[in-house]
Image (cartoon, rainbow, N blue to C red; front, side, top):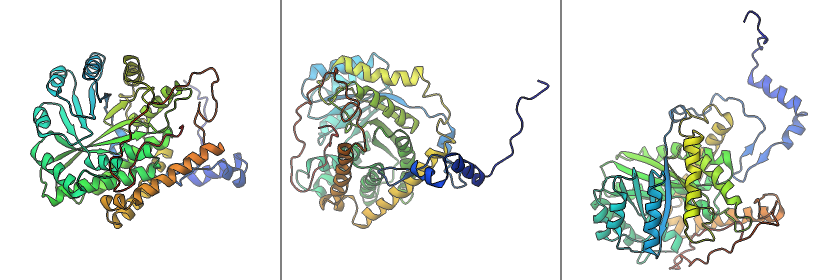
Length: 439
């Protein structure tokens, strides 16, 4: 075109931009009223300019691939579980997360079903796996055995004999079987009510306890680490969370001699799921899975919207799976080259969450590390205080749980929560459990 419709803009410094914004918003006083104080003690401002110290990472400039993962839990009915596995394999799933809550005798049948059907299958044991069970899984391509004895003890309030005995049992399995990966169930902290800074700090503490055990036993070979994170509804904070975790994890890996291959598995938070106006759970899990994917997890694992109140069923499994299929194949969430790159707000959140969490991690390590702060209930008390504060905000209306505390649909049916047996088996310390926002 011979004539431009646009005139060149004079360059403005960051200070000039902020001055203009403050003026347009009514001055300093009115600007300050727009600042939100997040529960993580972070001030959220209306504007975030580029900072010279803004974190720039290679990961934010590459297309990050992720796998659609189906969550399937076995408790009692073998035939129902195997049918759900077969159904998932035939409908676009790339990875399976098979949660085994009690001993089973059909692992060989499972392996036959899985053959050449998925990239990976995580066998997640909620009990000490038997040698015979692991031997069946040993050497099978794409199969990883996951057992987090620390998380199981924390949820049950203790260990069958002692922490030292359970740790020795875990190490005996780990050194003997290559298919046993170092698995950290970091979701337990979020579901118990920890804020994001606490989640990151306590997961680091949890992971570092395992790394110390490996170092004490002269581990030299490379290890695969899978960390499970629960993503909540605070969209941008949750995106920043997993990016911050990767930065912090690199810090704790550095002193160790062995090579580490870190993978993240993202799932929806369970704590905020409702039995009132329960279809809203679909909206929650959609944004939570978006946060996980934009946070660059390696495996995105959705939950059925009715997990809290219904028995496993094909319809809910299909809905959960289709949410991920839509994100990946129709919305192109696996083809964006760094969708959050250049987002100064998220970069600022990554920086602040990293700094806060690292400070908390060091403080807890100074008290003696994960085992010590769990055995003395220091960790649990810190989380409980934050969880109670969040419930108080819901009661006063400062915080909203859509469909439960506000915007209730009087025509919507409510469900009855499933009666679940308590995980607590011991009384050595206070156990961590899911603390639902809507009781």
